[in-house]
Image (cartoon, rainbow, N blue to C red; front, side, top):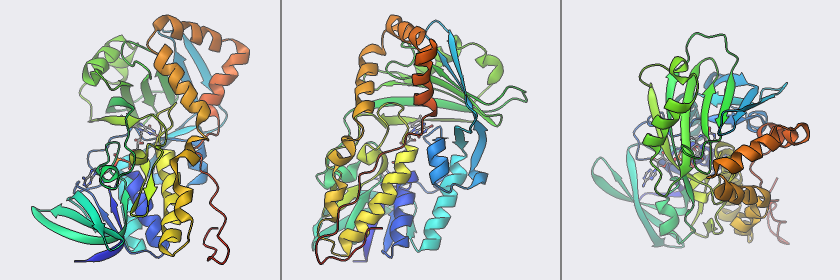
Length: 385
Ligand SMILES: Cc1cc2nc3c(=O)[nH]c(=O)nc-3n(C[C@H](O)[C@H](O)[C@H](O)COP(=O)(O)OP(=O)(O)OC[C@H]3O[C@@H](n4cnc5c(N)ncnc54)[C@H](O)[C@@H]3O)c2cc1C
């Protein structure tokens, strides 16, 4: 049976980042994904916020033009316009970005197995025997650590006895080429409980592409019908995005906050599999990059014999730093289905002092919070930076 230090399951942004980080730290890494190409079947809008753009060196060629303007619409259509002097958002050219990340993985020495499905794992010699299927053939790999980067419904989480997501939004969007227009790039957010209960409908236009989407609480939500109805109601969309979309993207977005048990001696969860998504904004890309880098440190420390490395990878250490966002998520779950309440909240947000709160939500330098790494135990190697 072939062996490696780590098998990473899933080559989305979380898996690609974790695999590269672990390989750069000297670990022998195998990366598998059931997709044959990483740039196929993109699921995300790809909006990166300023803090991520500042802290991570994302290639400029994989990012669309900057967006500095947000318009927040109440259910009756009254807009609050927020302008920033800074570049607040950029929409990733996600196919290109995933391909670029894969090249970096290969340069770091990652072994890439495309078109390979993870079937399961069982305990084996202190690690795992991992079952994979490629081109109809089954094979087993020995791994000291399995990294579950396999998305919101993680099979790795279940097999390792780790926590699983239970609270989701369901999102769907269509992507169009931007028309030749002189409109400034903008992020339009529609509070519309009929089309997007508990979340927003969105239109992002950056002069290059137009993304039109909705998301709502997963139970009983029909995203295709909601998107059609949103398109019919939102003003001006017909002219902005005429004809058939280039692509449709969508899927589940876990919004219950980081899960409590995301690591054990046999493996770690990253990205959506770990519930690492902002419960308020439903943004997960910043969390993919930060948590994966942190997981790479933990994996290296754990596999080098650091006695308390895994203590640093406990979900409650992250959750305690997400308290206000979890509270706002509960408020949205409760009030976000009532047009009356949302209209009143928007009227309050349009008053000058509270417009600052809206600015903070959209333009604040928030990011996925990481706890401090543990102090090295006495006599242990100092592996933390
Ligand atoms: C419609 C929508 C819009 C969004 N927009 C934004 C946004 O603008 N900004 C933002 O910050 N966040 C956004 N998010 C959230 C963000 O996209 C996710 O949090 C992030 O992409 C999760 O990445 P991931 O690598 O954890 O998971 P994924 O990208 O889902 O990757 C999981 C990978 O695992 C593979 N896989 C799964 N099971 C197996 C198996 N058994 N065997 C082999 N491979 C397997 C899949 O093929 C997939 O490639 C959006 C989400 C949705 C659904």
